[in-house]
Length: 459
Image 1 (cartoon, rainbow, N blue to C red):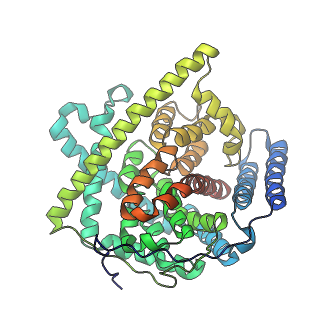
Image 2: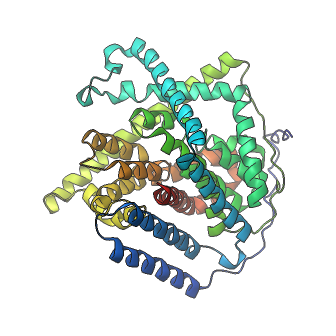
Image 3: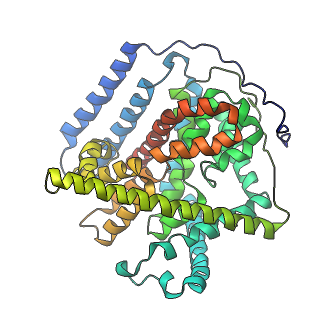
């Protein structure tokens, strides 16, 4: 089914569907859920606060899943209105996907093949970068890594490659297959499920384009799913970059797929559906191809990739400079005090609940804090440095769990990015988007933590 094209610019957009008032979550329920999460976390810490074996670390992660879901339930706008079908099927799908990737040799082989394909895309982009930048694009070791000439070219090429796949309709077919399964099992609307599925391949402002005509008329719960899922995923271009940094490709691919049902059921837990979605029971793919042919698609993808690469470079310059400034100020207050140290202490309990070894929770916790306050790119660069120091500095298990938890756009800057990107698609919903921004950040960040905890249970 092909969706109708968008209305003319001079026609006012139809209003969103009316939403019925839902009974709010009783304050006593919220307090009880938060107390329960704290009790579970403290109990597991008291039992497991020692160098763990496989069983103890899995218990940590299992407790983490319970705690994270309890926190999400405590934040629910209307816990009595939550659809049990959506939550239970979402959790089941998440675990089935994780078990298939982690424990099935055949499924894992498919993911490894896709990861190898992404590595080949990076190698292909290196050829173009080598021609333009010469020896600056080559890596001769840690001291020879020039970020602008090595890490940014893959973004440009992968963006162009995905634009060509979009032109030929390949992405639309894959997205629709994923969306149909989740929509049928979880009972979510077609438009929100399609956009969530598209986030596996596309960025947080590109994925909504696949359901562009329906965004102005989405319910608030659908808008939150649109935004929260965007923050729980990364784009194909950034996926290639992080794999080029040495991050485990299977873990990145697995958490991106797991984030589809996870971000959906967390959205419906935090903000249950209060209206009747326009695309309930249907999965309409909006095909609006602005390209004349494959060459035009490749050229347009290069242009989009260049803008993304420049944005990444500018964000890194700005945020790394702010981190250095804060570290200088903190160092003047107390010698050795840095943002990394503060984040490590604040997020260490969260890292513990992912199944990270107790002696390494501070390091992984600092990565989580950096990802939230700055962005995941800064955190992945730090993880790349630590990987070069060997397993003695950070174990392989902790590195893999960190990859699961870092793979997402959930940071404060993304709130503004989505407000600008999605707001351009639906100008009449800017107020709703602004109100939902921090809630979407909460959903996206929590989804990456749940994904990591599920992996911690199964590893």
